[in-house]
Amino acid sequence: GENVEQHPSTLSVQEGDSAVIKCTYSDSASNYFPWYKQELGKGPQLIIDIRSNVGEKKDQRIAVTLNKTAKHFSLHITETQPEDSAVYFCAAMLTSNTGKLIFGQGTTLQVKP
Amino acid sequence: NAGVTQTPKFRVLKTGQSMTLLCAQDMNHEYMYWYRQDPGMGLRLIHYSVGEGTTAKGEVPDGYNVSRLKKQNFLLGLESAAPSQTSVYFCASRPGQYNSPLHFGNGTRLTVT
Image (cartoon, rainbow over all chains, first blue to last red; front, side, top):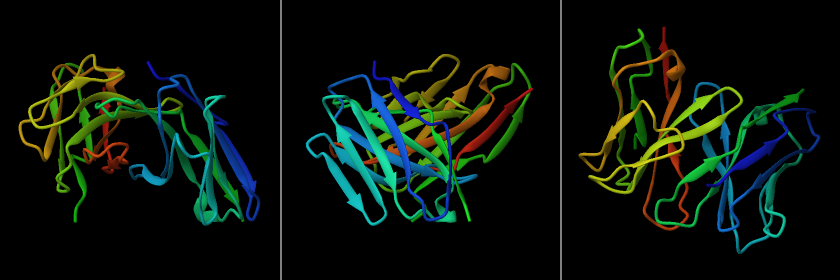
């Protein structure tokens, strides 16, 4: 089955710096890759997603890149702010009617003011 | 719109006791999922449902049962709780459209002593 590896597990940056989180997946048939942000005591919330027919997608300070050949995708946050501090999860969806979403292990991002 | 609502928010069980976690969504979504979240392991899929009356096993189904008698509700049952089932449980739902994102509830924190 699909396996998703996420690195690093923790990341600390200064406010205003950029943060990059990387994920690799095992099933080359996966074609949907969302990123979720989880704040303390809450459920994960979608922040950006990318489909396999696209190499890069951007939404203000957040961007995601996808390399299908290497089977890896990355989240880039520019000009980080303290409110970006949270746990971030990448995920990969198998190409079937089940829509099973397999998650990475999570990255705890701390943005220091 | 309430979105995805999970009850209860917290629960403490003794080993061997049983309980049912309720997930309700008001978005008319076809697909529903139960995940558990443990430190350093991300979100792992327990069971899921692709429509009313259907259920299927995820990555870690042992010790759990589910039912989807009504489209808006997805129940997760623990017949005989074990300390290894101490976790935070998240329910999620999504529409039937291809590659649509998951919407999560705010979780149920379960402790088994």
